[in-house]
Length: 94
Image 1 (tube, rainbow, N blue to C red):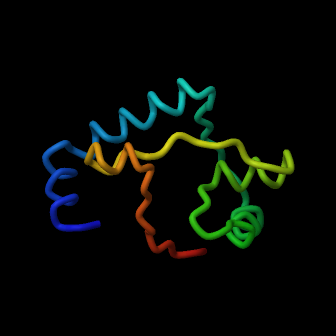
Image 2 (image 1 turned 120 degrees about the vertical axis):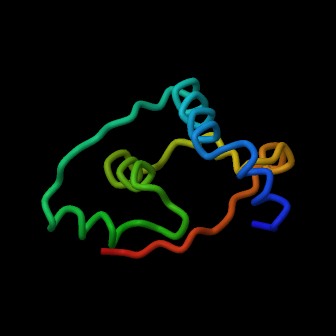
């Protein structure tokens, strides 16, 4: 993310961006689940995750054979939303 994009994100606020993303997901027909899983299952899911893949997408792919298209996450600028750009976030695997 460029310094300009970071400044726009800070001005807009992470809570506002998250609320916008939640509305987009609900409008697209997605439901939020919270579950407790064993260490073994958590490790298996972590090993199955593809690069840039969220946990929900991993579960869909494994259980249904494919994952539904998700709305893009807003990163703080209207240019990001229009282009559907995504930043790569390093993830630590358990």
